[in-house]
Length: 207
Image 1 (cartoon, rainbow, N blue to C red):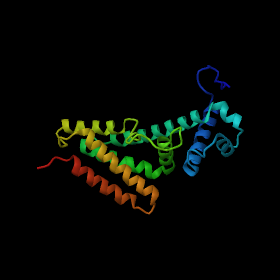
Image 2 (image 1 turned 90 degrees about the vertical axis):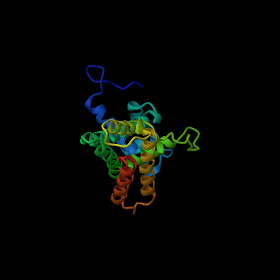
Image 3 (image 1 turned 180 degrees about the vertical axis):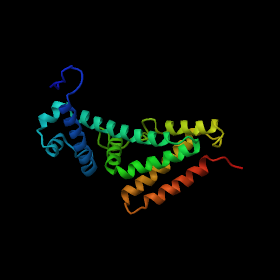
């Protein structure tokens, strides 16, 4: 079934775009509360108050809908982090802004974290196993490594292997967020301050 397009034939109408966003929002809610495997097209349709055929009108399959959902979540996450980092002119401060933004966005968008976790760890066989490190996708460590390299070039950060340090900082953030998801009583603001201290020790020049 091919979706109708707007008058120009190239882009969806306002109504179609709004309906697609509604379906993506419903998918986020369901994955966050039920998990990815239990988020069926029928469940999404019911949450949206539509028929299953109406969902398929806009997205030809559950896979297409959930992938569009993951893409939107990741793009929003990346845009926020990039925006926060861009506010800092000093390379050291930019790296610390990265740490705060990574934690802050996830703290404010817990449902998005669940979508990312569920979908990046899910596989077709249902074993929920992936190659170690495969979750670190979409240029995460590369972005941070580039910030570290810029800081080194400016003489503000110590010389180090930027990939290793970027992975270490990213892993520390992931570890704190994973613990917070399982133990919501964790003081995430205090944890963020500790992550900043950890990062400063890792990146600042040493005497």
